[in-house]
Length: 315
Image (tube, rainbow, N blue to C red; front, side):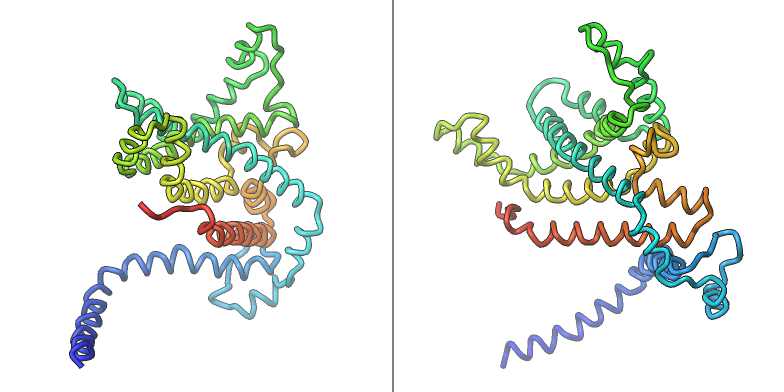
């Protein structure tokens, strides 16, 4: 009886707490509704039309008239799925993911381990590794476009010192995406390295002290202590980096305009931009956007589903 009475007393307090919190939550909720939910709903309706983005959008003022004039049903989605371009774009994106993810994780882990070690000048290293993150993609892409130049690029000049003839990089269908991956890893490893560093610093040092007493070396400590306890941070990094990989755009547009040689760097967001703002096929671009959203949703759901098999949340 006492527990029921206590619960009854707590219920009004909870309701009052929610009412008190509403004024503080309302601005964020309104912003989320106006700038996220409303554009997504609008995009869904536009994706079943052939609206060109130039004529007036009367979807809310006159929805019946707008649909009567522009409605094409699922024609945009059929056009995408039955086009060879979509599968080339998807293949290019998957190639980027396969090349980018392992390199980014390994180098980010290396950055985190270096920054977590007790050596002099660690603060300087943190600044140096984070400078690429603060650099805009426009500046970074132009730098890497010069570095990867086949005639006067730094990388090919260094390879020439060892008698190796460097590839054409951004002018080659085989190497263009590799060049994009190199620039992306350079840009992102400091960002994800600091995330992993925060995870490393959260591991209780007593585990390492106990392992040293038992005679475990550094390599054994890394695989038996560091990696298992770092899996929550690794899981977060995997989700964020995978989503960012499918949203690849600025470096492609600057380093390899128009999808690169033979369409080797055509990716999802680059196609959305081209169809929406260059070809003025806003309905087709909107359908592409929803397909991208569906792919990311499924991949994230799969990662969330299987996280319990390898992510360790126990301290």
